[in-house]
Image (cartoon, one colour):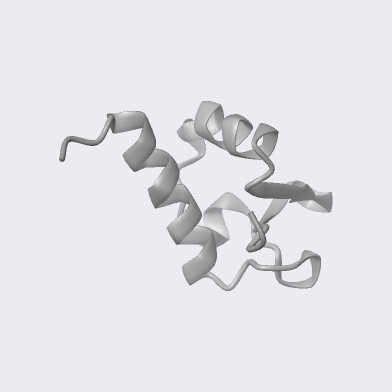
Length: 67
């Protein structure tokens, strides 16, 4: 199966936040803490709009594991 590059990048962003333990507001991480390149802003915005990533104070995000 061939995956679109955008889908692979979004999945990689989610995996990075999960690996960093960012699954609640208390454990939310910044992009740097999660090891995500900050140049992927478009992908972050898409994931936030889809409700997969939830933004918190201080530029931190966590994965809504119920999505």
